[in-house]
Image (cartoon, rainbow, N blue to C red; front, side):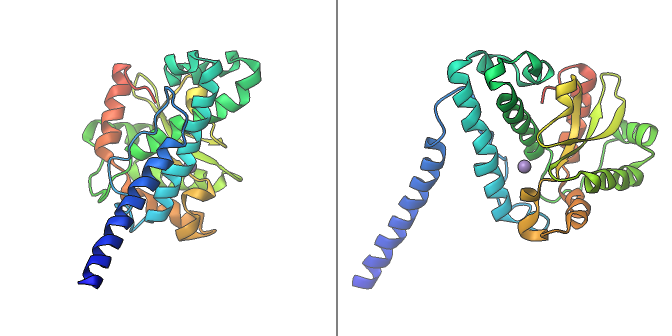
Length: 240
Ligand code: MN
């Protein structure tokens, strides 16, 4: 009985600590207009391609830090919290000088990661719909060439950065890369999808083998969401 009670007590305590730890992770972020968006799937859902610890650290700690920093900036610059992120990024040079670089980097990080979580999914068995496939064939030389060129561009990012496919309102696609947390949104463009090639995105599972990560990443691309983003871009409603 004693053991049983102890087990129950310990189980309850462990659950309480887990709840507290989770609550504390969020409670550390100052109150403010910026919120960490949920993944929409479990941290271990992409485990065959991206391990659970990487996903948890990447989401809670890396993206979480952007949220914390932005809420701190918003205390003195409330417009940060009331202006659409894509509009702030398109006019980042007009941000107050004292916070310009920091706000630009953290807004870019927030936009990039918010996009990144939503364009991945477990399984990834789906493929681009016919409308998007036609654009990929027309503008990027077909699906296989797009993947090869995207992986090549991701491999050539020196240090930390991102590789993206951008989309215009006319539905035209282009492949670009950016350093650090820069994003084509800073040039007023729209991002169809992108992959994070910072080492924190892959190092635990792949160490220095970025090419392996880039090749594996396509297994978790969420083509139904990417297709919806393509339709939104053409309708002029795609944001970040
Ligand atoms: Mn990242």
